[in-house]
Structures are given as C-alpha cells and as structure tokens.
Image (cartoon, rainbow, N blue to C red; front, side, top):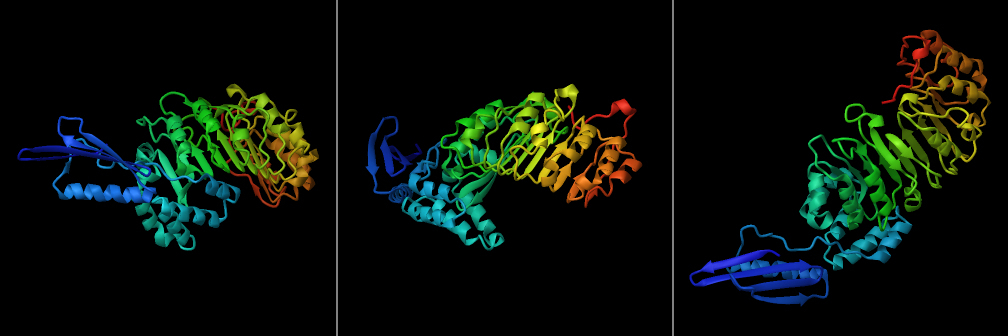
Length: 445
C-alpha cells in the first residue's frame, strides 16, 4: 500500500491508499499509530481509478509526499476479464469483430487494453505508422498489461513478445546467456496465466538452462497444466544454437504426449534436442512436424512412422548417430514409406541419417514418393552408390520439384549422377570421409 506522510510543526501524519478492481482502500492517522481505515466501492473499475488518482493529487496538493521506500503505485495489475467475449474470440480467432467488441466492454472497465486494441486495429493497414504509439502505450501501462516479473523478463530480453489487437500473439522465452538466473518454467507459468496471453498463438522456448543440462521436463509440465490453455497453433521447443549454446544431445526434451490433449489445435510443432518421448501422436490439425536430434531412438522412429496426421503437409526427421542413441531405419519407417496416415504430405525430410543409402534404395518403390513434391536427404551418409541408385531410378523422382542431398559424402561423380534426378537438385557442401567406414550423420553430439 503506497504510504504518504506529512510532517510540519506539530503535525505528523500518514495516509495510505490502494486500488484493487473497483475498490479503493484508505488508511490514515498519526505516524506511529495504526490509524483508521475506510473502504470505498465504486460501480466500475474506471470510476474507482478516477477517484484513486484524484485523491492522490489532492493529498499531494496539501503537501503529503511519498514516504521513503514507499510504492508509488497501489493500483492493482489485474486486467478486466469477460469469459463470454473471450469465448467468441476463441471461436473465431481471425475475426477482428470479436476483439472490437471486447474493446467496447473494456472501456467501461477502465482497462488500458481497450485503447491498445483500437490502436492496433487502426494500424492493421499501416503498422509502421503506429508502431511507436503502440510501444509507448504498452510501456505506459506495462503494470496492467504484464506485471512486474514479465516486465523484467522483457527488459532483459528473456521474454520477447509480439502484440496483436491488445493481446500477446507470439512469445519467445529463454535464458539469454550463462549469467542468466531466469527461471524459465516459472516465467512460462506466469505468462500462460496472464490475461494478456489468453490468445497466445505462437510459442518458442529457447535455452531453459545454461548451467548444466538444458532440460525441458519442467517447462513441458507447465505447458501441460495451463488452465485455461492458450490456443497455440505453433510450438517450438529447443530454439538454441548448437554447438555454440549447447550440444544438441546434451539437451533433454522430455515427454511430449501430455501436450496433445491440451493443444489439439496445434498446426506446427518443432522440437530440437535429445531424449524425446512422443508416445501415440494425436494432433489432427498439425500441418508441419519437425524433430531435430542427434540420436532418435528406435521407439521414437516407430511412433513417428505410425502416427495418423490427416492434415500434415511437411514432415522433417533428423535421425542422428548410433553413438548418441539413434536406432531404427528403413524397416521401422515402413508405415510412412507406405503412405499410411499422411494423405496430405507434400514435403518429406529424412535427414541426418546413417542409413541414407538404404533410403535411396527403398524410396523408388515406396508409395509415399508419388505424393510428395520435395524430398530432403541431406546431412546423412549417402555415398556415390546411393547417388547412382537415385540416378538409376530417375523416372520415379522426376515429378519432384526439389531434391536436397547436401552435406552427404558424394564425390564430384556422385553429384553429377544425381544432378538431373529432380527438377531442382541441391548437392553442394559435401563432406569427405577418411575411408568407406567413417561416414557418419552430420549431427550427433
């Protein structure tokens, strides 16, 4: 509670005031006593805030000053919430009418988000012209729109936000360097619980911990327990640079299965790291799935291959090195190669594999090949023999718009053999083995 004091002559008085919602609480009396307390209820938050500001100005006009160590803003950081209006936005998240209706209601509550919604709506056709106004408004009302912890995280770039029509649409959260003490799971919990993130659509998690293992178990637990859960359409776990920030296999992602029921509307899922658990994948709205790892265990390969994704358009899998836990191969991928459960798939990446030559042999006769437009076999162990297999079956690949075989082990002859297999072939940046037995997937550790 902010405390103001007045001392002059024989007078020695204090005055405290707090605003919470539509309630103003005051306490006053002689310094050294408990004083008296009065609670005033108003018809709306707007009226309460008006009275709160007016009474502070009155006291300051009479010579009261903020006591040393006092908090100058006793206004609550609560945001007004209307579940019915939120439900309308969630039902049609791309319809601006729902946001504008919310803005009209928020005006009556004295919530600064009303002005932010209207300002950002006006800027939809010319965002550059009002970007500075939006930033100024958010900064001026950061206490109500974010709160102290999230404000601090934004200030040190642990948290990066994109606002849309008064709410946070995109967020990236992660420790910034080795000196960071930010508790990422705790901050994520605060973010997901805040009204400003009610319509959060895209979430990216960077480094969870520079000091020791980069472990996402606690982060995933927070995501799974979010109530109400935001309508995430895109989720990226593991947005870090390897090996500069950490090695990819030094990261433990954890079990993703609990997220499926909480975020059934996900359209894009990207995961980077090691020790990933998928379970039975159930994401019927997913369009893009990417897993980047240095060692995908056999069970995970089977789980991905058996998944039913009626709307999946892009699938990218990094398999990794046996030394770092990679297992499985063409046999385990059979359901996928037989095009089971992926009727909409158009882009397929089977990357960073130690069995790339075997893939070259299996793909020409596979059912999946006929339906895809782009094939990525990069970062693996393809030899000239694998390239020759592709060339010998060129007719099966002629419909492809693109084929990527970069970062394998092709000689100039191998690159030449595969050059015309598809409409567009990327074959540069090849690696050179010490001998035939030393070929390895590009990313392991």
